[in-house]
Length: 112
Image (cartoon, rainbow, N blue to C red; front, side, top):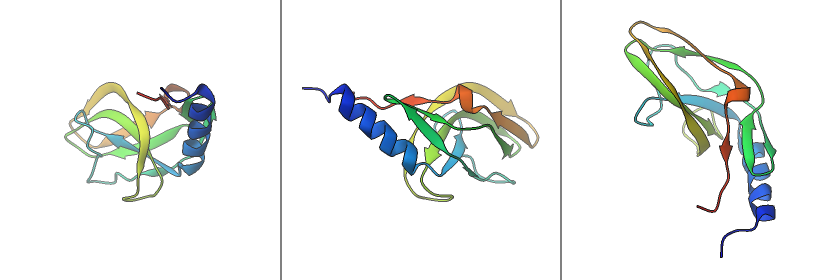
């Protein structure tokens, strides 16, 4: 038997409360490193089983990097990854900035 919708909603609310930072990952799902890149403080909220970041974030992206997705974390370094989603890939030859729009983020807590 799968988890009930009410339980999934509760889990999403708990996950949103645990999110303190967001970060970017490359096309393989590995978090970016180098240059001036760092996770940024973030908030999140849940709407049913859907979790979404609460605002826009501007990340510093190192040279020779492809941004492939974002992830939510419970710490500025290390810690747990709580989920995230893929983004349209964007490649950087030189260092640059990536604007992550909170309205475009989100993931769904599911029983799958």
